[in-house]
Structures are given as structure tokens and as C-alpha cells.
Image (cartoon, rainbow, N blue to C red; front, side, top):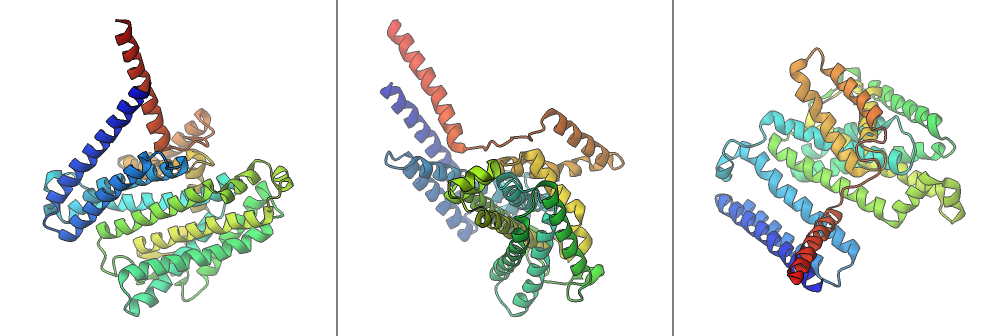
Length: 413
């Protein structure tokens, strides 16, 4: 048994090192014309190998191994996604890809998918993990979008580098949205279920009406000419990388928080608030914190939306926008971040796939939603999460059984 364990473990190590080594070599050779990108890829490959060493070490805790494995998965996704985006702009960097790349239209859809992932996962934190039905998430998105757009104008005019303009504007939008989340979270302590949903819906409508009547936000005509990605001179391919990395950071933050001691306290309030309070969990503190964090990430998603669109109008953040985000959460599975990610990708891309059937695409979209809710009312994944560590353990267990069976058959002979 011990020998078969060692053989399987050695097989995994050899296979992974071979994959990383070959892919790293291919990219370094392909990127020889762009030294900075070459160094970046060499650094990513080195990080993956270093993480693998720590992940396989006996003294490494299971929790740390899980984080390292997921970090390796994220780096692999980056290695795959970046060439597809960059090849359209600089085909000489990746000659081995040929005609395979994200075109301008596809890159735009990719950006929208990333933004919707941020919005869906942030709403899932308050609705799925905290257990509070929120119908006004578009209000936080609007606050983040308009704040980021207005702050970006000031910072870009001041001559700050584009990176700092985007980061500081997103943080400003997120912080103001979080403060709004705290304001709405405190009175929400007294409400539950439908009453809370109606209150959050009213909040989103109040935000939309206020924006609609302010001069510096452009009023009903909308806000134009602010420092969007296009005006700052960022190509769609470059901006898509900003959006992708922001999405990864936001999702990682929410997942790590959900797995922490504070996240478990929030989940306990969803399961049984009275029982949670009986063991010393401060429901007031964690409810307000849950609302604030959900609003914070939602505001950042709104900021990304503002930079991408280049034009903002209050009607973009109406009731139907909140419903669209909620549909992604419910169909992905309330309480599953993986489900929200999958649903955001599917339901952003699906209307575009049905665009050829322009007259019937929204009908087909609605029918699909109805069928989904009848066949699988708990959502695509329910409360389950996809874990790379669990997948590796399952594959390893199957290989161990096969190797043990082969050893036993060999012994019988």
C-alpha cells in the first residue's frame, strides 16, 4: 500500500512538472520578442513549481495545501487566458496559436462575464451565505459606477498613471457602496424575508432617482466623456486583463472570507439565528458586516462596468438589473460561489449565442430559466463548491485502488 502511494504521488509530481516545464518553455520561446512578458511568464512558472513543492510537503497543513492548489489553478488559467487575449493585438508574440484568439467582440463578452461574476458572487455573499434576500444590488452597482467614473476624471486630469487611476477609483466606488451597505444594513436588522427584499428594492430605486436628478451625474441624459478605459488609451485587450485580475481578487477575497471564522459565523446566522446567538455570535455585527462586504464588492463591479461602458445612465441600474444578478445567483445555487461563477458565464454568453434568433431569443431564454427551476430548483450546484484539492484526492484514490488491485493480481499469480 505504501509503495503504491509513493508511485501515484511520484506520477502526479512528474506529470505536473512536465506540464509546467513544457508550457513554460513554449511561452518563453514564443515571447522572446517581448522580454517583459517573458520574465512574467518565467515568474509564473517558477511560482507554480514553488507552490507545488510546498503543497506536496508533509508538514504543510491541509488548509494551506488547498489554498496552494487553488492558487496553482488560477495561475494555469492566467497562462491559458492571456495569450488568447493578447494574440489578437500582437499576433507575433504567439505564432503557435495561429488564428485562435479572442477577437474584439469576444473580448467584450469576456469582460462582461468577469463583471457579472463579481456582481453575482457579491450578491451571493449576502443572499446565499448571510441568508438575506436582497433585490436592490443594482443600487450598490450604480453607486460604485458613478463614484468610480467621477473620481477617475479627477485623478486622470491630475496626471496619475492609469494603473493608479483605475485602482483608486475602484476602491473609492467600493468604499462608498460599503458605507451605503452599512446604512441599509442597520435598519435591515429588524426585517426579514419579503419585507427586507422590498426595503432593498426601495433603496435601489431611491439611489436611481437621486442620480437621475443630480447635475454632476449627468441626470437622465447620462454621464459621458469621463475617463473610461477607451478615453485613457487602454485597448480592450489590456483592459480585459485589469478586469480579469480584479475579478480573481474579488472572488478569492469572498471565498477566503466565507471559509474563515467570520464566514462560518455568517453562515450560522443563515442556518439558525437563535442558535447562533445562543453560542455568543453577535448577529448585529455580522449582518451589517455581511451587507457591507457584499456592497463593497458590488461597488467595485459597478466601477469596472463604468470603465468598460464609457457611458452611464440611471436606467441601466433599474429593477431588472437587480433581477438579472439575482437570477444568476439563484440558478447557480444560493451559497455556492462556484455556481455563481458558472451561472454568470452561462447567462452572459447565452443571449449572445441566441442573437441570430433575435425575435425569439428572449423567449427561449425565459423558457430555459423556467425549465431549469423545475428540473433543478436548488440551482446548478446547490451549496456545493468545486475544489481542486478534492478532485485531486478523488483521482488519486481511484489510481490507488487500481494500483492496489494490480498488485494483488500480481501477487495471486
